[in-house]
Amino acid sequence: MTFFKNLKKIKLHWQILIALILSVFFGIYFSEYVDYVTWMGDLFLRALAMIIVPLIFSSIVTGVSGIGSGKNLGRVGFKTFGYYITTSLFAIFTGLILVNLISPGVGVDALTENVEEIEPVPLLDTIIGIVPSNIFQAMAEGDMLAIIFFAIIFGFFTTRVSSKYSAPIESFFKAVFEVMMKVTMFVIRFSPLGIFGIVSGTVADQAADPEALLNLFGRLGLYMATVILALAIHSTITLPLILGGIGRANPRIHFKNMSVPLLTAFSTSSSNATLPLTMDAVTTKSGVSKKTSGFVLPLGATINMDGTALYECVAVMFIAQAYGHDLAFFEQFLVVFTALLASIGAAGIPMAGLVVITIILSVVGIPLEGVGLILAVDRILDMFRTSVNVWSDSCGAVVIAKSEKEELKV
Image (cartoon, rainbow, N blue to C red; front, side):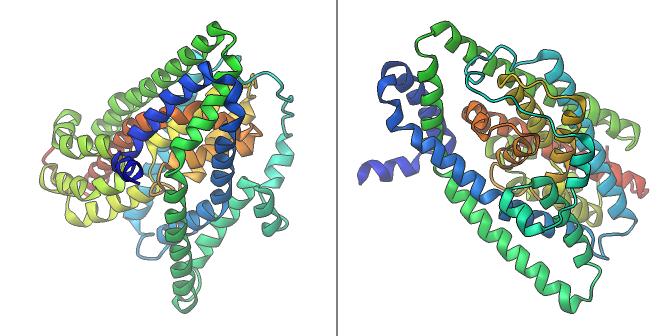
């Protein structure tokens, strides 16, 4: 009992790191017993698949119904939504370009054995399939594009009916979302065991070939470098150009003003937990009005995921490369499109990137087991991408404030 009590005191990211180290050791030296632990990885992936549909459906309905309400659909609302969509697209395309240039997953042989050839779905069939003929069948089959489309439509038209009807609907889906958040947190608590099972199996398969094992870890390091480089380009070039060009603000001064929230975001990996600090810094140091920051920043914490959307794109491309599946242009566009849509309302989900990655993988037909490759380093990259999310939110507040003719301190 004392052991488990002490284990609970260890933070999750340290538990994941310990599980990763132990899984490599177990896979190398006890490969003959690996079948006794791989079931934990399978169970964890099934649990992730279990929560995807209710979690993403409730989060999108809640997010869209909040965006689409009358009070939010004014001039400032459209500007804010336009900014977040634009910067998310810039981030995703930055990641897409780099992952195609660097190709971190090419040459990973750990996953390519015994994998069936993935047949690409014709473009017209994909477009038609977005509109579900039966939403319940789509949910049962995990047809994520159809589910996301219906959730957006349902959330939007919820705001177009009388408050007598819309209020209980919004309240219901907020309640479902909160419950699913609790379920998600419960599942994520078992991620160290899931990682141990998945990575042990992968390492054991390659234990007889040390060169292939080293290549696997080398490619994983290259994947991390690709994500961090893409995030750095977006946060130090793209966003400052928008901030200086459209917002007419000094990026260096604003970055200095945001130092405390950014460090907090990096250490906590939570944009929601950082929100009070972000609002205070943007208002008191950068001079954005409380009215603007009070609208733009909470909305950003709900729908804006520049760093996470970029990460999702790179991760899915890396897994596809590792499986030897060369995604065609349309399939890559589908990755971008799904990452953008699934990001709406998903920012508050714990380890949101991991959840959305499983959605994108199912859309492009890549096995969910590929998540095991990136699961071990997800927590580390989460720190970087959350910081970029918060930085983008703060830049958005300044840009919107400037467009509203506010006097800023930057």
